[in-house]
Image 1: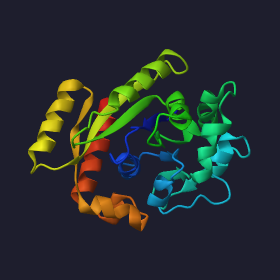
Image 2: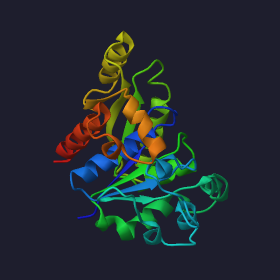
Image 3: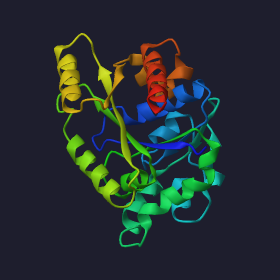
Image 4: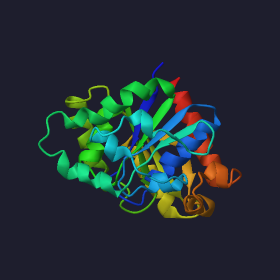
Length: 253
């Protein structure tokens, strides 16, 4: 059975998007699912957060047809979790693909030959709604939206969901909302509790029950090039992402 492709997307930066992509990927891998994380962000944070380097070839060279994606599947060092790295060259896609026929389907076409090797393929999108995010949405079965429990949390989400609807109405009819995951939750503050209530009210049935807390160890892990389950499996952050992985698997049935 082909793996499910999930785009982790929010055009607002600083919401825990890459942390969620890395940590959820590692949590699913810890549950013995085969996972591929594709770094679709020119900043390359997911690549570095897994201790990787772009090397001579990375996602940009696959998208431009220079190398097959299968040649870019690198073990992350965490069992069952592979990585397709990214680098700042990837920003060239935003310019080079303008006006090209069928550019939206390039990532989907690249993933097709490797899809049956994995149970889940996670696409870490850049914090924008440009070509790279559209490429990811066109390839994905679902969209996972990390949302921080802070003021202006809902800012921009309507734009993302409008983009999802446009993609679903055109190039990718199978695209659906995988769910919204609340991040950076601080149970001590009224603000976090109020934001959680507001988001659940706005998006009934679409918000994961699991909430990711604000956690120092979770923030430290990327600087060590390790997912939180490797850096500190006993931390609240690791526990939250394991719970999120289990909830996601239950939702899929």
